[in-house]
Amino acid sequence: MPRGYCNCGPFRVDIVPKGLLRPLVLRLLSERPMHGFELMEQIFERTGGMWRPGPAAIYPALEWLESNGYIKSDSQENRPEKTRKQYSITKKGTTALSDYEKSAKEIRKRMMEFSTIYGRI
Image (cartoon, rainbow, N blue to C red):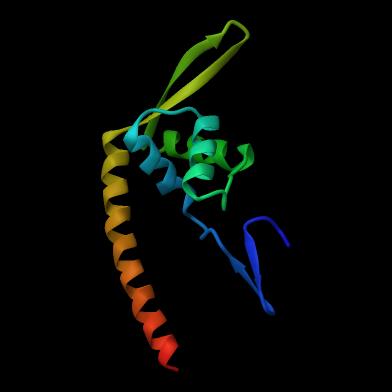
């Protein structure tokens, strides 16, 4: 079974909804600036080990968020041989995160309603 899925009888269920990474990155960066590896570790910790996005997922997401003005990066010299980017959320990112959280609240409400209806069927 591929990582990130559960085998529920004959159905393959995606445990982590598509499109969740970018708002989750914004949420984490709203708390404090972080670099890519730190974001991967925070997602792993906060999902109880259920999800660990790899570099092939996190860095394109960071690049997209930065190129669209939702986050900004500052290079930090951690070691003489390597430069690590530290990312922080912008005002545009904060606004987008707020809009996402309002939408997510409505989606959760509808999912609970569906779950109640499904339980009665």
